[in-house]
Amino acid sequence: MNQLSSAAVGEKLAALLTAEYLQERASRGRRRAFDAVLRKVPKTAPSKEDALPNDGMRVTRSTTAGRRR
Image (cartoon, rainbow, N blue to C red; front, top):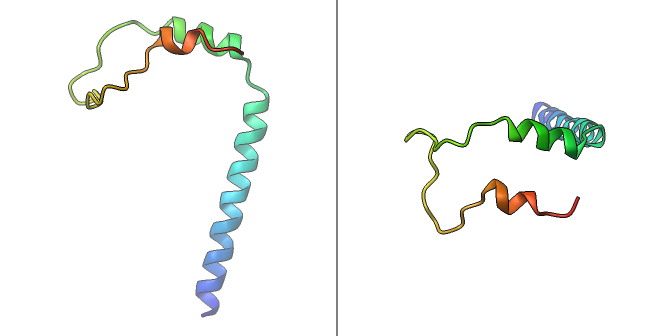
């Protein structure tokens, strides 16, 4: 029982520290820099192995580019 509770506490602590790290990291991000990097990605279709199933919900750069920052 002690081992189970120790494992559960350790897992919860790791999750909290990860969330904190990601929030801190995200706060340093800049949208303009992110968009500049995305503009460098070639506009090619993904390989067959990387393609998502077509579910009618396609998101493209033009869809996300117009979002308010």
